[in-house]
Structure formats: structure tokens, C-alpha cells
Image (spheres, rainbow, N blue to C red):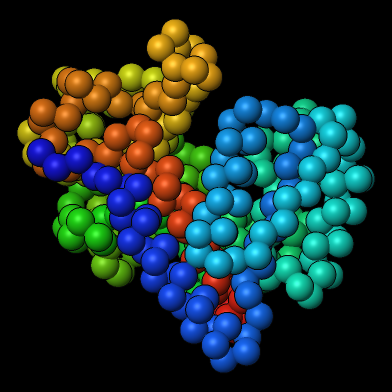
Length: 292
């Protein structure tokens, strides 16, 4: 059994990004610039954005963090989005999710210029991805594809089950794994809360990717010997042993599932660092104007 080390892989790939940034600067090109908009003070979002800022520093990107109050309205946020769309110094930006209840997420996501949508959530980028055209890929699915590639995990002809059908992870990942590419060429079953006899299906799968946000959902009895398991779930649960008072827990009951796997990703330290890597790669692509 091999534990997939997303932190290690992301660290190695970030060195490549840093080298490319230095090469750009040596040619007199501008430093890639990533901006993030954070509404409110959600603990998980604060941590995630802080990590993104640190990632930018590591690879030599310029980063900007724009903070809005928890009570900020939709109109105010749309104004910030339009300003970033027009700011030629900003190559790409994200609006950190989730947003407060008074703001409609889809309205905000669709207001972002698709050429600066480095989260890869805009319908234009999702549509291009579906058609196999050059686009910004959603960061988490892109990171998972990179992990499969790095560890040389065979996907062609394999039965892959994706649990969770969100527009951010499950649905785009199912498309990427089924496309004619490497990694890809899988037969993909996309499962969700209405899927019947889910355990019977997962026991047939060569690759299982969970993106539910339900701690310990995938148990040892649901996995066959030799399966590959990628855990995307990250739920903050109370913990008396950590200084913060909480810990991150995945969708997989790791102690039960890991002994049966050929490869498995832990939480934390698995997919999370690769999600942020996907964001950096999209920003570099935006800076290089590779979108066409």
C-alpha cells in the first residue's frame, strides 16, 4: 500500500513553477499576479486563503487579498469583481467560497471574466473543458489528475467511481477521467445521495474518489483489494488534541480502508495541496495568455 503524498508532489511541481517565473522575469515579462476576494471570516476560508498567499510567495507570484465584511451585499461584491476584471495588472482571481447567505454564488461566478477565472468555475470554462478545448480546469480535479499522473496510476480501461456530483469536484472530475487522454479513458460511474446499493458498486471499482464531506463515509467493507482511493473530503470536526480545537477529517475511514488499497490519499496532506497547485498553474496559464 502506497500513501499518496500530495504535499510532496505539490512541492516538487511548485519548484518547476518557480523556475518558469524566474525565466519570465529574466525576459522582462511581468510577475504573475493572483488576487483573492474573501467575504467574512469563515475559519476554513481564512486558512485556505492564507495558504494560497503563502504558495504565491513560494513560487514568486504577486498576490493580493481583498477582504469584505460578512454583511457585504451582492452589489458590493459584484463591484469588486468588475474592478478585478478590468485591472490589467491582475492575471487571475478567485472569489473564495462559500459566500454568505445574502449573496448568490452563481451570480458572482458568472460575473467573473472567463479569461481570469483561475478557479475554473465559469460556465464558459466548464463548457470548454467538456468539449476538450483549452480552458482553465477546476483546481481540485486538475490536482487529482496530476496526482494520478505523478504516481503512474493506470486509469485506461479501469472502472472509476466518483462519489459526489458537485460542479466543483465530482462532475468535472468524472468528465476528465472519461476523456480520451492519459490519465483518462476510464469507465466512470458518478454516484450521489440517490444512488442505490452504493456499497455494491464501490466494491467493483478499481478507483474510488470520494467528494462528499461526510467523515468516515467510505468503510473497509465497501472497497475491494487493490483499489485506488482518493479522498477529497475535508470536514472540520472538534478535537481536544489540537491547538485550534478542530481537525480535518476525510470521507474515508482510513484505518479500515488503507490496508486494502494499492494507493490511498490521506486527509490532510493528500488532495488539498494539489488543489492549490491547480490554482497556481491556472494563474501561470493566464499570465502566459495561453487561452487563445
